Image (tube, rainbow over all chains, first blue to last red; front, side, top):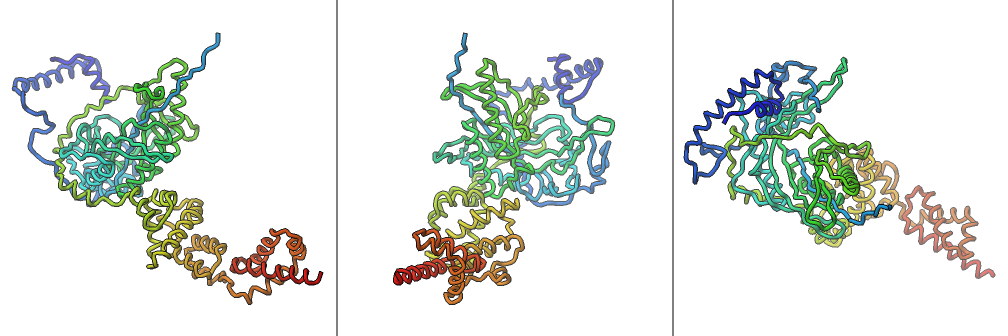
Length: 96
Length: 504
């Protein structure tokens, strides 16, 4: 079931990504292909199988509440595109 | 044509969502210290809470235990299977672009909280208690060219956050306030959170709609945010109830929206920015396998539950013969109840003496000490007058070393200087004068220099005696034993009266 342009635009807006008309079309095709691949799973008969969020039979592992060290501030901020003092500076999010 | 005044009586339908920062050493999913409030910006961060690619979260056991204990204290069921989910939304305070939260399988469900409002008990359902992570802190600033920007401090990102969601069972602003103070007290007693509302450790959002009293159906609800104190929750809900009532009575419909409370203006305003459809696209967190909660673990936690306010109130009433009122006020805060009991435990005393001591401690704690603490904006846990100091002061009053009047002055000095009451009494010469021999000359002197008052008394004006007692107390700078002064003045006046009637 291919996606339509409106769905792609909705996904882009949720991710706050602006797309050109050409890009909408490109992602519409790519995302539709990915979805189509997943349709292969629909061929399996899953009647009687309980839904699960995790396919692997793992149990959550807990960590003791012990504090360790953090990154040095310089290192922590080294990826920030823009800084102001010890803060990361970002564009104000427009409250539309 | 006159319009008929509506005779329909409305009631609010309120549900509360409370976010509580949990008291842990480390963050929810990484080992960074959780003490973000006092740390330099971006000094408590690592690849996990910065949301760097390739990092993986590991669940903090203490945070899960705090949540389960809260669930138990709120009479919840603790399912044996729980999981975490991703809540997706892009915002600069959310480092990963999603928040790890719990969607359909929270740690605690289906509980209730009993409230005591105006002498009757009402029960509010607790829908769920779940665990999630806090987000980074944003500071919005205007830049020099007029455009605004934000500064991000990631320290708070990943701090354990617990959410307690009530059923829409609350039917007045007053009840909402009692719900919050009761929940707050439980969290304090459990020791799972500081519960500080000003610094954001305890935040409350409210859902409110209105309906004709008794009707099963209700109208559109609004979500009210930005309430930073118990008082503002009370005011905001009352405001919002009245606003919705006016909307409905004017024939319109309440718009379903988020509204922010403005503390300085005492109104709620629409936050249109939040109106675009939320589409969180929850899905199971792939980085965290489901959490299996062993019933034996829950039992262990149940055994560890401390005495809560309601139980402590009952115990204080039984053990120390306190009134319901005194016990309620003392136990509303764990710190105050702890202070009370610490002051009583300074010295072992007989049961009889203990009840009297309990009454004295209660009076000091709820009276003068609370007044000093409030004026100084100090929490009782940080009181400069420690429980042993208060016990010492009460001892000085009981042994008649210092008068009750002066004891108040001593408490104030003790509060301001941190010196022990005995030291203050010694240094200042506040020791009570209990010897008749040293008081009689003063009494005679006062009677001599106030002939009018003595005359008034002899004419039958009993209150003149009180005046004279006051003069004696003043002359002795409050140090005289008041009981003794009463007796001496009365005796002296009596003898003057007798002398006069003998003459005539």
